[in-house]
Image (cartoon, rainbow over all chains, first blue to last red; front, side, top):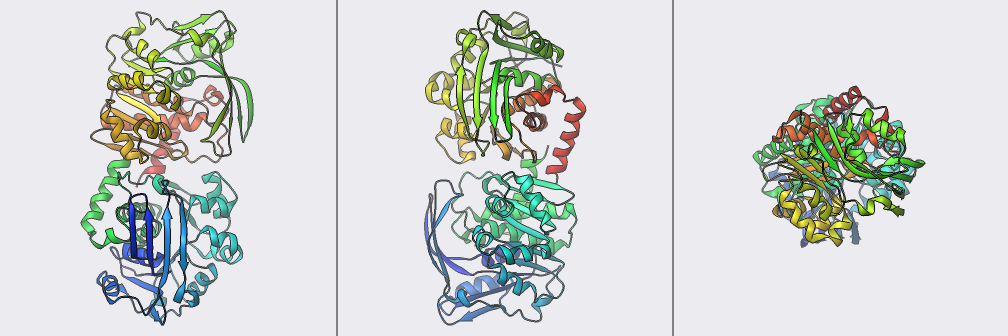
Length: 300
Length: 300
């Protein structure tokens, strides 16, 4: 079983959705990814928090088997985000954003972590993603997330990074912006032309679709009656997916498909409560049960 | 192999999409349904056209094995529709609508057709759908389409019809309007409470999802790089689905799932050209080939 290293944010979120609100919940892309991946394989977390970061949150992450040696603690406050989702949960407004200690985040990856064969570059500045990736010795699979903000404001470093990515993870809006194509199949084709070996397009409540030069795989989202909070769904998806790939080492098309379903399973759970709360009680049995429900949902 | 009877419109359409435009193409819900279903089983068409309806279009429908004895010809012009699709193909504007001979359509179903075991009530006035359904002797499966217009303006007759429907076919917007629920799973549950045995929710480029009290089945749409015209996609979907059900007689959950994939296949083809043009050259081999592509698209 291989380990996965993730670089990204650890944050506290104030979240408002049509289902309610939650204040000061543990969030951040690297957090949600790491917790989701921890069900499958060892995880190295590369991130920064302020000296306000509570011991019990640290203990929670450690209890999931996550290696926190790369979790820098700096004087100051931890990253904070505050947002409000619309009735259409695909739309959200950022109400406040305090980078705090994250503003000067320039991670120096420890020697032991540099040998991690699976790497996930969560949604941060592409220049920072590249700086981190450069420190890894010989990763067998590099997955990368990004967002509209970077596509618009840092297209050059992002495009320079793409040929080094095995699995680019974007949502449909990001795929459109990156490719200039509205149609999802055309958008994927254009993105693949820019270098990543495969591209996974997340479509929220509609599921996800993977494009590689040889294959296309589509999986629906799990049709939940109650979606409390979509925050972290994309990162939990990536965590389940990359974690499962690292656990099995099966990077064939079939292995990637199963990993994507595990990603879908983790995403389907995290939205059942605010932030990452649902994952705090999630068991491996829950994961296997919903994997079987995905089989039942899609088989014909 | 059982026969299916369809009641709905036969029309001529003027269509404008981002891919181009086409004038005076054969359209109408019953047309697209009948042609799609004709790949699988005998079809009885119950509709009305004006005395302007060309002999070659009649011959085309007859060449598909469609029984035209229920295609009334009345003095006057055939139904005409003119519409324009937006860049987002899920949005369209109706530019002109001439009911013409369809305005007084009150079909009297012939004795032989009344015994058809499969019935599709295409998207017309619910009172008219009920009047037609009343004439059938003992259908084993009744499928029904509707639209926002009827949900808003004829909710009472529509709701009276629902308990008699085995398979209600709506898109997500219609499901929301009918149920008052935004979430697709809740919407489906509410609709099932009103009587239909199963509800299929069409989601355009995202595929379709079937809800029954016992099971949920989701299938993605085929990721085409070129979608010329979505007109008729829903009716071709229903035609492929109900036609396949009538052909196999397999109304189990597994049979319904396979039928839904055949519906998805027909929908994926009809959007490749304007109106129903693509179906004029479509072969049964094409259908089987894309069915296998759907297996490859979804299996894990």
